[in-house]
Structures are given as C-alpha cells and as structure tokens.
Length: 397
Image 1: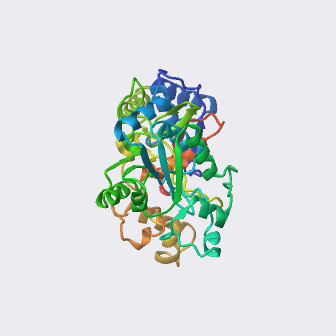
Image 2 (image 1 turned 180 degrees about the horizontal axis):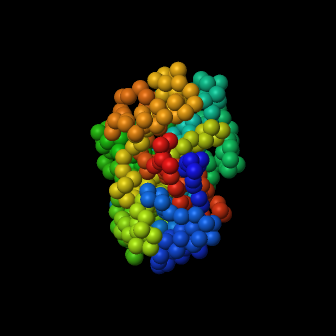
Image 3 (image 1 turned 120 degrees about the vertical axis):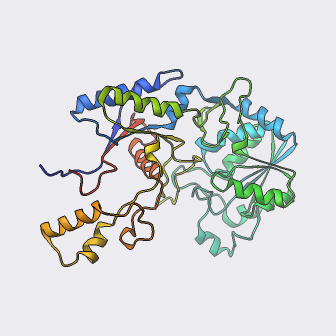
C-alpha cells in the first residue's frame, strides 16, 4: 500500500525525573512502552529527543543564589558592577539578578530598548516614534523613561520589568541606577566593571567593551564555570541556559551528556535493531508573531546529539518543480518525474534554484524547535519527544 503519512511527532510521557535517576533507562523504557501501548514501531533514523531540563535535573546540576553571589564577588571584587543587556524574565534572569545584587553595593542596570535580545518588549516602536526617541543613539535615565513612557506591563506576564528588577535589587540591600541604551560602550560612562548578560551577541559585546577601555568584562557564561562549595556548574556556558528552580536555587544548563545520547542510541539498537538518532534540546528558535518574542533564551538549541543529526537539510522544493521543471505534466507522470528528480538530486543543493524556499537551518535547530513546541513548557508531562519519518521524502514507501 502506498504510504500516506510523512513525519509523525509524538510526545512521550515518562515518570517525573529526579536527581540521580537513571535517565538512559527511563528514556528507553518510556519510548518502548509507548510503542507497545500505541501499536507503532521504531524505524531507522527516528529521533529521540530529551528536554535539557530533565537531563540537568537527573545530573543534579543546581546552584544556590548564594553560590552565584560568591562567584560574582570573587571574580569582580568591585563595589559597582554594570549589568547590561539582560533579558526580561522572571524565570530566566530575575533569580540570577538576586545573586548578582548580593555580591556588590551598587548595580548600574543597563536595559536595551524597546525590547530585549529575545524580543520581550519594554516599549513599542510606535511609542518611540511618538516621542521622537532614537533607540540607536539616545540614552535614557529612569526618570526620563518614566516621564516619557510611564509604566509598561509585559504583554503576556503583566509585569513592569523595570520596576520588578529595581525592587529585586533593592531588596537585596544593593543600590541601583537604571539606564536605557543599546550601545554597549555607554556603560563605561558609569563603571569599568561589567557583567554582560546578553546571550547570542555576548562575544561582540565583550569585544566592544574591552576595546573601549573596560577594566573587567565577564559574561553570564563566565559565572559558575566551576563548582562553588559543591554547587553545580557549566564549564562552557556558566549561567546561560539556567532556569529558576526555587526562590533560592537555579537549575543550570546540562553538561557532560555526550555519553547519554550515545548510550540511548546503543540501547535502542540492542533491543530493537533500529538505529535511531538522539538529541538533548532546550529552547526552540522561532518568533511569536503577536508578542514578538524570539524563543531562544538558551545559548544553543541542542547542546548534545548523535552524529547523524549534523548538517542542514538538502531538499528540493516540490512546488518549484511542479511550477517550473514539470509545469506541463499531470497525474502519475508528474509524480514519477518529481520522484526521479528527488532520487537523483545533487548531494549539495546550495545555490540551486530548485531548493529556494527550503529552510536553511541546522537540522538540530529545526528538530529542537519542533520538539520544544511539542513538549511545551507547562504540564504536558512529555519531556521526551519521538520524531518519526523526519528524514524521509516524497519517494519513501
């Protein structure tokens, strides 16, 4: 019978993961249990994806606010720290800001505007235009910001993040001065000791600050790169990718999971004789059209994955072929012509017009976005996602 279904994505339920759980065994058992219960089979090149949250939780990769404060204090040893370009997030950054505030006497908090790096908005461009403000050059004090724009609550959370961050810092016994600017070097007018909190632009920010006379620049990726008093850590990303666990604790981005993905792949092969690919994923990379939020607050979409997930898609655009190369064909003749074209496509279609409009992103980024949307961030209870048929095309039976 001719195949009628392409890619299938399934959220796999599993037990609640706790520290020191055997995550490899739980993942394999959960996937195979789902196969049996729902009457489907694994196929070669299926993808088993595990959210980074349960990986870090099983590793016990946690740190307290005091651990963060101690590391910041050791590395800066300054009474005033410039904290620049943080994202606006109660879950992602506010908890880190508490630790930073405990480590110093004053914070100069420099917020980008009208939105943060991942699209969380303080203001709209319409508000800026109405007040004749140029975000590329104008620097606003907190007083000027309030005079021009008053209080602005986030579209989804209902929080005025400026007020929220100011109160959070003050509650830790730390003075705070707030400025709004988009040029990194602006902070040097206030302090030469800077903690840059941007994610994907962090290396450029560090370079600009160092080239313009900063005495010390450390990013969030430079805090908790090693254990503090037995805490968790991430030697590559530091605090980047961390999430609030409790009011006094954060869960860090997972580390040392190369063996996990390989062990899952090996175990599935032993039990089913199917060669699957395995990945650990965090935030997907997509933009919400209403809130304008670009989802990717993690440093990468997929920190760990098996080698079969390397690379980018190499696909032909079916509608291009139907409208151009085979515009005079119909029915079975058209189907056979397109199948033949796919079977004989070049190994590298970069620059080929027949591939225009296909998604030029890393396979792990595409899969990570798909998995993140499937598992969600709430109470679905499916931190494992099984993707079947992702690498198939129109010719596969």
